[in-house]
Image: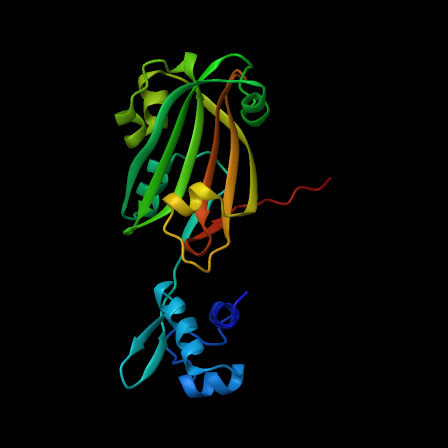
Length: 238
């Protein structure tokens, strides 16, 4: 990892830990240069990344001001559609449908999706733009027989709204897995990542109907610094 990347990560960590709090100025470029034993050009590279990530605002003649770096709270418990989440959190977003195709579930896809072998599924890839930047990449496999008349316009708007309100399906529960993954080719192509980014947060879900029929496999890949993943937990004695 290059030195400016290490400096950026250290400064980011100090801002997140409130060592440099909102409304305060970071040390000057000269002070940071001395502290990190780096050139001022290297310090500027680190500060430029901090600014692009929304952690600081450079003010001419004053320095780098730490500003609010609020992240969107994405709940990981429960089963909420993206449109419902957007409406509840009230953030600006738009969706681009990158792929919408019918595919056959072979052995490899069966292992991944748990959808029946030799069945057919809709394969959907959507990029979510949030406040001007593509920050989420959603890949879905939906059992074709349950929604044969699905259209690209529907998946661009709200898939769950169509499945529940139009088709009357009862979406009941999901098994979820959350991991930090290395960036792949599609992430780099479709998400607005910085050169310094090496990872995304991946949320994989197998979704079932009330009668336990497997409906959907989905993987949502999120820009790491855009979201805060939250869950409500209640203690239960064993």
